[in-house]
Image (cartoon, rainbow, N blue to C red):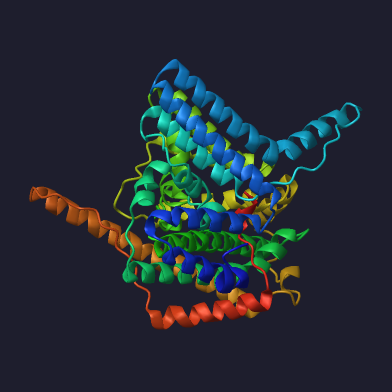
Length: 486
């Protein structure tokens, strides 16, 4: 089941919210758990058993760590076993096919018979809920979070359906108190509804309308210079509106249930460096990689060379997390290399003065990375890279316009980039004003309370657009999210 489906909008969500609010507060974790299991099992019932097994395993690992004493050798053994088992499950279901195919390719070169392996189906959302489970047991081991005794709350946290399939990657220590006590109000619920509708619009009206441009552009055997750049611009916008649209819907659903989730995007395409980009894009994942991979590797505490190595390895593994394909490894290596170069060059990512050149350079680096991220094979990526730099080609309307692309889709692309740029620059202006205000209040010896400045969307605009998105969805019948494959 996906958010952008009629069965979710008109059957599952109304029934769930009805039961949720009719249930006494102390029992609502049961409603969350049962509802989330139904949501997940809608895809495949058998993988629900794996989901439950992962939940029980990590609950008892957390209890074992706590009973052994924080920082003891026994606790270290518990957390090691817990992490290894989690990564083994993730490795088998996500990378077995890739590993066997890679080995078989090498064996074929040597004239050896290939290994036989039944195709392993990837359980949806496994990358997200495994990472959430790992963060929990590590936090318990570090003493950053107590081991919960309430197995229902913990199971509801792992299964929480708004963020189950594509994040944000939650940490138990950040939401544990909300499971025991959270506020509900008409205003909070209304905020959630508005946020959900906004994400739905971003996904269905913008991202889905750009999909044909992207699919046909990347599938071209001999793309022209114009085709290639159109496809890359379309994918850059599509991925953002698709993924941030999911995040908006997840956050909105959380608000309807009384939860406040962490923001996962902060206008990443206005970044002036790749370092800043990763502070604004998929924030929950980038902070997870920093806290549970980069810092344990040594972070920047062991000299420049080790720092560069750690940046590269963190992003390389971050690329591998996204999928079992050499293209994702190359994408991770690309970002890791650029991060290391920026660190070596001393790029000032906190500079308040905006530079158009730095912004355009960062955006170019991001888009070049998206090429290999989106490509199904390395050869497809190389093909598109060649077209991107083939300025001596005739700039023509080739196969991508052979009656397959509508003017509405092209205008949607223009609208998407107008929204990205205008809203992004407005956000940067607000951030600069906050910094100025912060400095003023510091000089006045007063404490600044950081407050997120929301962007108000008029209901007169968002409701009709939401209805339009529903009509569009009904006509197309199905609309999967891009990050479901990860």
